[in-house]
Length: 386
Image (tube, rainbow, N blue to C red):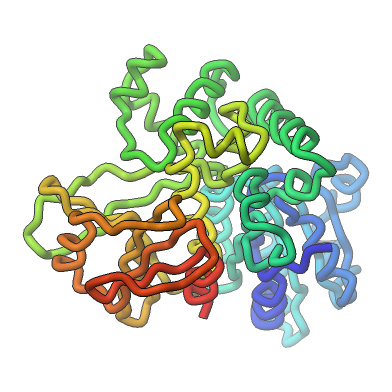
């Protein structure tokens, strides 16, 4: 059993709030984590995909009254958005009566709709927590390359072989395309969406060009943008925004796009082993996305990230603002002997970051010129989490 870092955050939020929304893509471990939390508290678990459980909460107010002293876990809450209003009424009613309010843990996979509904309906009553796939801190006993190749979904990472891992990820992709995605958006042909997803994998870490992708799929840019929105909402794709500044520079304003889990990126491209990956043209973009996601998942809630690129050639792969006025410039290199290019130094002159790092694929940390420090992934993740 892998201990999830999110567990401590989730316990803290449950102790302070009447309701907590736990989001994350399917199969990332939300239900497992919720059951672990339930095992340490008086709790009742309801799976809204099961008809029997749906019948149990036919009268949700009566159900919550019977379990007033327990943590009520509602899994797949996005399937019943109409529950948010009665939950608000239950929380407010018990507050007015001076009684201990029910605590609710709400689990769902559709990030944007779920967050919007919970924030609008349960404003002031709810906290939010996102569960990411495994990161390098959670699987320290395993080589980072295994996590990079297989990705962080538990069933993929813990599979008995590379072949079994790839089979699981290919099945995951099929399930999303044929069953899950049609539930969250307008009807989109599964084959078209697979081609779009695969094209994003081929362009891992590149600036998003809706027109170019549209030409490849014979679709207009608006439709391509809608497809991207859907993948972002389902926490399958990260849209990394350009870093804005008041420096008067002409900036590249389109976002960079990454398949969030490196293992899914590799499955879409038919990459099953680390040797296949190291010989594939996407290796640099894959490593960049893997590093970005590992950093993003451990940053404090007040942090923000982006990338910086000017039309004059200044570029930083990742800009991190930890929320305390401290800016980091992070360059990402798959090589174990990284070299910093001129564009990075030009960007640092613009940004004036307090720290400058190059994240490489080796195990050692060492200084480079101009106060740049080369560090392995495990080090930058520990620094980001501090």
